[in-house]
Image (cartoon, rainbow, N blue to C red):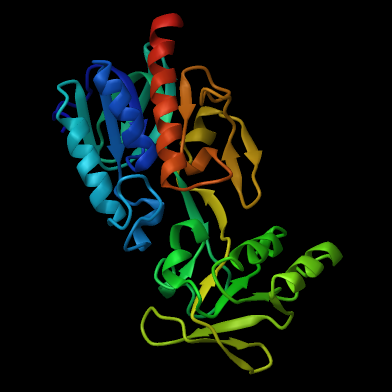
Length: 308
């Protein structure tokens, strides 16, 4: 933990966000014997999922347990510090960047890594939020195996949803609900037909089932269709406004804004790097961790080769 003084001594790097990307970045910097501060509010995007799948060596473990182990390993290095809370503001300073923490303290770091993640906005359908991560999912590579060969559905939420339905047919029989807004084009419809995907234009208005399970969906015309698991692509929003406050460039991603970075995870603001879901159109634990490694290495290299 960081100390109790009102203003901490300068860190080499402060990392905002302590999930897969942030902890992976911190590990590289701690092993480089740099003074690194990991700031984490404890609200990762995947907190609604009971288990993480597809992450090498960790398949089936709860994501919180994976991160807890990783954080303990990082904090075993003598130059690593941890703050449980939020960075509520960031601004350029003479020595790099000043960060205001949620407990009223401030810290200074020569470099910043934003691993702040995104917030999901699910379709406005009754019952969907309570089932998110339990029987309503985003990524078939993360959750498809566990629901394979059941009655699956894709609820369209953006223009690429038809592609999602075509893909998910590898895991089981799929019904694609266009919600009356995202009908497949001729080529997509032909591929859906070849892969056995049913297409329904009447919108889903409610999910039915006990607890967090899905047993059926109710359509706007009252029809009830048996469904066992649902995939949808939520719209995303920045979970933190630090990137915007610092003036980092943003790009329009397929479902929401993304922090613009180069191949080394450098943002448009010198000295600020970004990794994880806030800076990647495609996301899972492995990709976030790999991006965090790159951001940590790049931040370290910048301290050596671009120290000013």
